[in-house]
Structure formats: C-alpha cells, structure tokens
Amino acid sequence: MKGDDVIAKLERLVGASRVVVGEGLERFSRDESDVGPRAPLVAVEALDAREVEAVVRLARETKTPVV
Image (cartoon, rainbow, N blue to C red; front, side, top):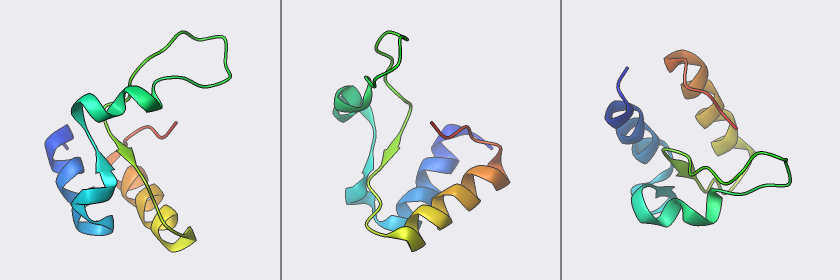
C-alpha cells in the first residue's frame, strides 16, 4: 500500500486534523535516542487507547513501521 493510501486511511480513522504531514512533522523529528533528527512521513495525534489500537492495527495490516 502506498503512503498516500495509508494517510487517507489514517484520516478516516482519527480525522484529518489529527494526521500530521509535511512541514508540521518537524516537531516529531527528535527523541531521546542517539539517532539524529529524522522527520517521519506521517504522525497521528490519537486521543485515546481506542484510536491508538486502530492506528496500530492499520499499520500491521499495511506493513507500515510504527516508531
């Protein structure tokens, strides 16, 4: 499945306003690891465990890595 297809499915799951793509990803490019900054292709701002579960299920079905 292509990235745009996954993004469209994420938007249907949690709403487009909570799926971050493009320039908004800069704030998601760093963590506490020793790896330098790397912006993800997409970020999801889930509101609850149900949404997290749905996003992880979609990632598993589409073989999309979750970090």
